[in-house]
Image 1 (cartoon, rainbow over the protein chains, first blue to last red):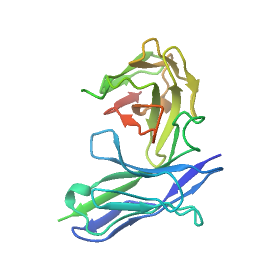
Image 2: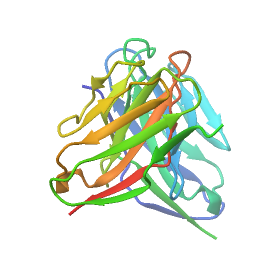
Image 3: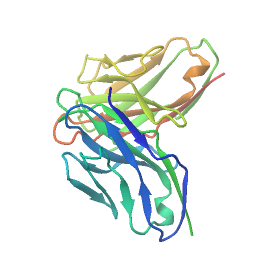
Amino acid sequence: GDSVTQMEGPVTLSEEAFLTINCTYTATGYPSLFWYVQYPGEGLQLLLKATKADDKGSNKGFEATYRKETTSFHLEKGSVQVSDSAVYFCALMESAGGTSYGKLTFGQGTILTVHP
Amino acid sequence: NAGVTQTPKFRVLKTGQSMTLLCAQDMNHEYMYWYRQDPGMGLRLIHYSVGEGTTAKGEVPDGYNVSRLKKQNFLLGLESAAPSQTSVYFCASSYPQGVYEQYFGPGTRLTVT
């Protein structure tokens, strides 16, 4: 079955440091890929997405590129802020969503803490 | 719009007790989902629904039942709670087109003693 593996955390950075959170996946077909973020005490919210190979998703300074050849979707940000402290989840959705009913397979999550 | 709301926010149960978690969404979404979140395991899908009156099993359905009597509501029931069901439960909804972005509720923290 489908699976998503994220780099082990937690990750602790100083403000303005460069962030990378690795994500690799196993799936049949051509999944869509997502990064969701969970701020303390809240539910998850979509951060960015990519629906086909070589697509780059971006939002709030975060970027991730869908690499089919390496089955990866690594999350990056050039300069993190204290407000970026959260849990980040990589996720995939089978095919185009129609037959999978939008079901997501999540990675285990990576806790990011940014210090001033 | 309130988005996705969940009731209650916190609950403590004794082993063997039953309870129902309520999820409501005001976005007219067709699809709704129940997940549980456990440390180091991400979110795992319990049950989902693709429309009013329909439900289907997800990855970890044992010990849970669901109902979708109205399009805007999705109920998750625990008939006989067990300590292994101690978790944070999230409800989500999505529209069945495009990118299928899921919108999540704030979660319910359940402890079973």
